[in-house]
Image (tube, rainbow, N blue to C red; front, side, top):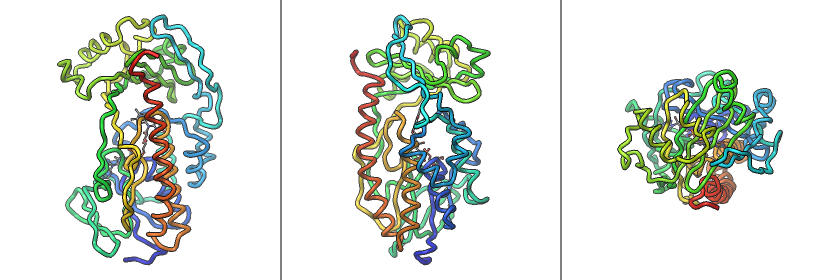
Length: 369
Ligand SMILES: Cc1cc2nc3c(=O)[nH]c(=O)nc-3n(C[C@H](O)[C@H](O)[C@H](O)COP(=O)(O)OP(=O)(O)OC[C@H]3O[C@@H](n4cnc5c(N)ncnc54)[C@H](O)[C@@H]3O)c2cc1C
């Protein structure tokens, strides 16, 4: 094993949490390698917009030395909310903020780009999937890589998201379906190409909901809008309805039936998307999700506490990364650092997961309120 001051640290996953950890460690002169299964930073669209909160995500960005650059890209006006009646399409009262410096929006791709650019060249090993980790008996671990090779390290951090390949070394928990599915729809260059939709969504987010159904749309950068068509249904709703997810027209027809009776202005979100629908059944880990401490290995972000996507997951993933980095810098052994980090992260995420479960019930209520 290497010295406690210079442990071999492997972060599995170059998502927001893993990159925040790597960024803060490097800022303090520590070595770290990030193993990422995707071939490059651009291999996949990074999805919609995230609001980054002052008390969580922004603390992590400050720790990584990126808060000022974040502020040049973030959109405080993105906190505007409009809630519409689903049947009439008219505005309902919503007491939300209009311009909020506390939790401005940023595109996920921009945020990930900021974190990646802050790392020294070669920190991320792209196209390097990790299939699992086995203990070597002295507190160190052997990573099993997708190409059949192995890597021995002093600390493994599973930052590999919902379906973590590191998590089984700590916990038998697996994600369970929430009963809610989001179907994502994308609209490009909306001020010019979809002006009525652009006006309806405004600078921030739009929500309309009834029992078991919700439409949710958010303005992203460059005039793009991303919408989530949300409903309560079995995970395999499309099989039961004999709908081929690759058949755009069949998905649209089925969704229009589900939202029958809703105002035409809202149904625009189902009729005129520019990009293919993406089916996103929502999964969560049990809350609280916890484990007995094991030397030399831990989890952060969705791998540790996958929760409904109601605005906390990315923030907590980055805060976990920053907290773990600070613990590794402050403590004299890896084991002390892991214990200090888990003592903070586990109770914090247990509370957040319960809050998020309640928020999903409000966003997509099972009965009309
Ligand atoms: C539709 C939707 C909307 C959301 N909106 C918000 C929001 O507004 N605000 C918010 O805070 N959160 C939001 N979230 C939640 C947020 O996206 C997640 O909580 C956050 O991305 C978790 O970050 P992470 O770093 O833990 O994991 P991820 O972002 O999932 O990153 C994991 C990384 O690990 C890599 N990986 C996976 N397996 C392996 C492997 N075996 N080997 C190597 N690499 C691997 C992946 O390719 C990925 O790069 C949303 C989620 C969804 C689905």
